[in-house]
Image (tube, rainbow, N blue to C red):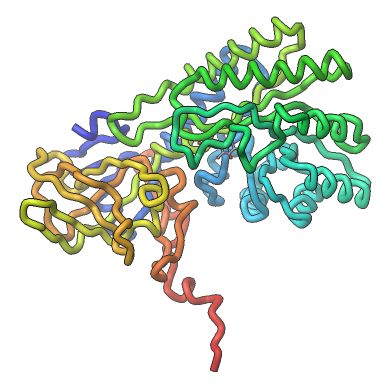
Length: 435
Ligand SMILES: *Cc1c(COP(=O)(O)O)cnc(C)c1O
């Protein structure tokens, strides 16, 4: 049973329930496609990280990587749970300010931060900029001189690790567009520029190895490599690191094949690794920062679609088409990502046929799920795809001039619209007539 490994239940009507709400009723009320988020699960995920650090008595910041799903309501929940926040663009920073996120807990990332982005970050006195390259150091320097301000920074480095995940989302290897190489001397050169800068408070190193990672060993390995460098700088320049940021990428369950570790287990392993390293190098224990995105919101979101046309190719397969696709979830087309789904209105019925779920875009590659087992399926059934909370809405696009779906939060038996469905007026609003 698919529902055995997703955090959702079946109600008395035999329908899928999310956050105490009937998924079929939500689809009827708000229309489809519809993103639905179970807020209590988002909170549970936040607390699993934060509470484990607290129980271990370790100073830490858990920064939600808001690129996974950024909206005002989402960032309000993250603020309520006392997490910090990663933003990677002016748009994400703008959203954070709109959500009244405490500026000191905002961290700015990016491999090509513009002057305007850096200026906005510095003007708003955000907590930290994660510096990625030499041009950026020059830009920050320039802005700080001009405005006579100071800023805290971390340096992003590439430790040359390749985790066992999809190659498109590996970022910690040496041949990466992100960060300074630890191996070719660039990190040392950048260190001197940052450490000796009178307006920059250089706090330590950052590394994000990749995404959808199931092994803790890669985090331990990266802590080991980063500490070797920190120890060198300590010996040579008496630098004492205040922060060690090991990034995000904690894997979640999309399908039965995914066997994620508990978040508490990840945190435990990371803390032990950092404690061991700081002891063996005789350095004070730095504050540990992590940056979970997918693991905060991924399993808390589902997408509801209406089933439309169906096509059976005898002896080959049966295609069923839904009213969304790569416009609201590009991950299957982009990463060959796998998902599981149920018919929300037939959640209690046993599976009796196998179908492949197609999106409605004009692309053969717009397939959401291959070979899904479902009860006997009809047009107008409601398909609920699981674990779409991360990188769904945030990667949504207007291909084929589709309007982006709405998003609804459910919690304690209440539902609330938090992102409006786009209208076709929204889709064409920037078009300008040529006659
Ligand atoms: C994408 C990203 C994250 C979050 O990754 P998840 O897989 O969503 O946890 C964290 N840190 C940085 C720097 C990232 O680019």
